[in-house]
Image 1: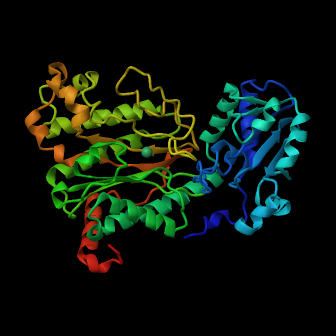
Image 2: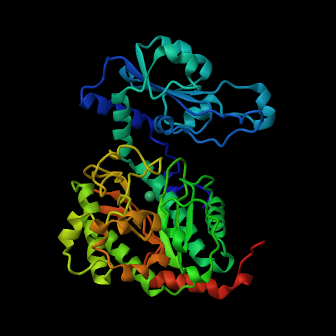
Length: 472
Ligand SMILES: [Mn+2]
């Protein structure tokens, strides 16, 4: 699976449509400041490390990619709104570099490959921009500094239009994201299946990356989070250096491959020896229930905050059943007291796209409400949005310290019962989901059924070390 999705063969990334959509968002709100406004965005270029001739890892500028579909370092794009004309500028050809890097794409090859009206070289940019009244750009930076007299940067309305447009994914983008999710599914399956050679969190990290790369995904959407036992309670644990000892019982891996600049973002949890411990399974099933409750409400027109708060209520009900919250308090009392905030401290999910935490979610990190301040989607769902559904439940000594030291907050918690759950660390279940006209479609197919997971882990364990081609 190192080639892209078959459904996209012969199709181009719809850059022109994207540029038109951005314009439509401006027009719809009457934000277009002049009739002959243009959009000009520069891609990233290769940058060397200081005092060294090695280039830093290249990651294309997402706004540029959105308007061009081009991943060539040192390129630029111009959309002239009055002419509905999209021009891609390739870097000027450096003859010296051909020996090292091979022949660059020609103008005609680029015209064939990209959904643009014209392909030119960077040397033509100045003259073209000089003919235009105002060219809006995201940023003036080291890659377009020389054109800054022609550019208007950081215009709020331009960002608004770009982000609103990026929020709603078209068919082409959806195919890219499904492909990324499919690769990620295979990687998660491989990780669950390879316990005999996974004696450190690093091995889980390695297994995931190995299988992503073999499928043609050279980049990860974000640094894989590989946890075991108590480190499962650290939301973005990326040290990935702990030992996986049998006494730890739980593993959590949050990792997603990227495909042509589009992200996937998936979390799975499993028991180290294939058998779920009582407490681990209880928490796992509770988080699964939170996720299902969110799916039950997921459709266009639904407010994401409602889904998130419903997941909190499910957690509270679960904690009452398990006895972690004292039964003398009602669900509503505990909800009003925000007693679940430190056990599910992050949001139910976020917009997913080219960035893992993609644009236009309208988060409000300064919201004083502890249940909402880390919620990355504060808006109503619309068809074409891709989001993650990722409830979690954690037992973090760091997060719970001040709760346990405050009699007003700790009165809800039965400490003797809580004591039994620390070793689980935490559980998160995360899938990538498209909002459709009638509801939703889940991209991720790797199982989250605890029995099936148990079978996969045990099948891997039964192969023993000899069943794997590991070098160390
Ligand atoms: Mn996520």
